[in-house]
Length: 609
Picture 1 (tube, helix red, strand yellow):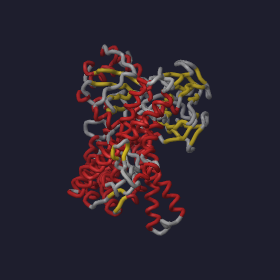
Picture 2: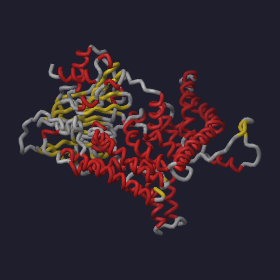
Picture 3: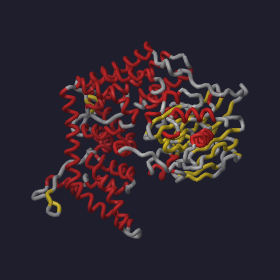
Picture 4: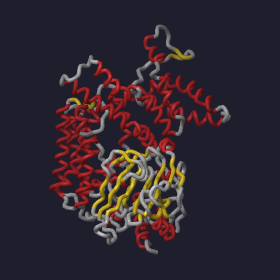
């Protein structure tokens, strides 16, 4: 009963066994579905020895334990007399959560392309302003085509990602979007005579760069496809279901969904414009002050359609109002870096600050610092509100989609008021954090001390790469448990080949039944966690095939797991694979490879102690 007291304490702080409707676990965390999240004491859980982190997200109340999660899980099941959960028992979500989830899930795969193209457009604006490029030159026209393509053909891309998210054929979804941009349809704008479809009047609109028409169309298509599959013989489904879907949905989109989507989008954009013009400083203060909280709740991507709609009509004020909030988060990281004397916290704050400044990736700051030291919450909110009020009052707009960073500044017009707004937010947040402090009086600021293990001071151990793929810094992983180093230090890999290879000689200490996570203890004592994908436990082992068993001895190069990369992505999950040294505290330093990519069995990490 090694974890009996910890299990009792966790069960008590989540509101008792009567408040638990379901409990499952993955390789690192307990995943509670609670009847009432308000009854759970997040602060007490976060301060508990044995608990690395608490994450309340997406209807799940997650308590991060680490490699020993299975033992704690079994204790809690026994103590609370709970019914054993399974990964298939997913938490019920509200309608609003589902809507935001669909919107977010549709845009997230496109964010890289949108941000990259948006940055290129911003640089082209600068190059033409300073006279480096002429808008009539062939070089400009080629680069402009590269920058504009993803925005112009946005209905096609959204048709694919949205259909994927809804479980429909993504290429039929893309074809519906393509129909709105096909020359035969767009040519109807100059058609002489009555425009009708089967006698019904047709309204021709420009659907390039639009969002809402294709959203409405594909949602109806997903429902229609499911209905067709119920009544169509399987031998005919390959061609008949797509054909009937196009025959029905494309005309409906042109006749109904498209015009309604345009009017709805214009109404939302008009409302934002009205509010910003009526009281720009107040609207900016509300947007700037609330943006970090919206990001924390995971609903911030739900505003992207409104932003895209505004961009299609001359500029988006929302991006300019929320930009200072993002820089306020960066200011928080700098304030902690300047004030703290704790080495680990300095490393965390510096490693999260740079990705924020240069790439606009601030989730590690939010989850690793903002949530950990809740005294800083008003600092960021106030700073974001002040900067947002400045940009809102001065009428700044974003002229293209781009992640908020120092490189995206040219995307805003007028530029000087925007620079003032983000500079004020960044500076104010830094000063508030530095002079008022970030340590909560009732929360332990010191990291949890783990059991010390004596290690030979001359020891140097090399951990080979278990996967072939592109290297990603751990603090950029889209999961706060990994990006905040709560599980330990390490690195992440974006796989190119669906095979996990043993990185060391050692013993398989954890082989999760779903095959998505493997724990290995090397012969020299390193505890290595290889977690294939993010939240892939929900796949219940689908697309994973384990090749070893728990307790089995392995040597470098042995095949551990095979997985289907494209199938996992099509199911809506990221395949980013963190490789974590879970007993990080046993080592003086963990040195990561400097390569941008790696092949299985190449040197990945060097452990010094």
